Length: 98
Image 1 (cartoon, rainbow, N blue to C red):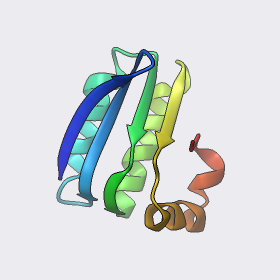
Image 2 (cartoon, one colour):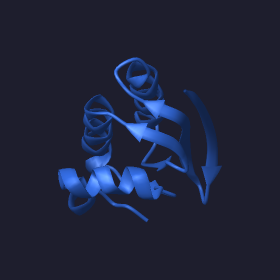
Image 3 (tube, helix red, strand yellow):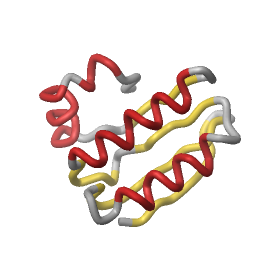
């Protein structure tokens, strides 16, 4: 997995590419915490994500909790495969997915 960071409309965007699983999730969480603690909003660009494990889902929920009292967390460019996982788990009803 690789992680790119860029800005969109004044908000930091974290764009992981590849699989987010038990092997790569710690890097993903570190980047979220690093950027999220100094930001009012956070966007996760999921366009390059091929797969999310339960560990990745936990990291996304933790990111949502981190940003909840601020401007919030949003997921963008979620592909069909990842969206199915989010729907099956009920996360799609809980998260801001654009």
